[in-house]
Image (cartoon, rainbow, N blue to C red; front, side, top):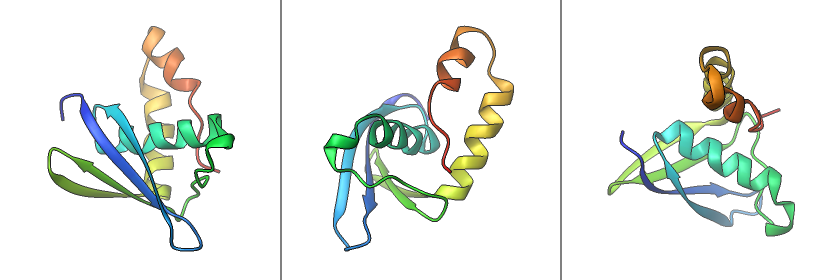
Length: 97
């Protein structure tokens, strides 16, 4: 997927939906950017995702879903494969606990 605007939505324990618009290169990247924003800015009130979180990613008029555990595996895999400046910047993003 080329870099494009995506809306990532997570539902909290009370059933409220929380959304963030991000510029991402894939559905996993979009979910990871939501995680980065939620953990880096706790004052926003966004729920902190976990391994069971279901991320809804809307991009280009299509809806995709990413499970937290799959996102965690993607993050770990990318950290092992990305090298150079891109890898260094990526490694500064959080991992799902």
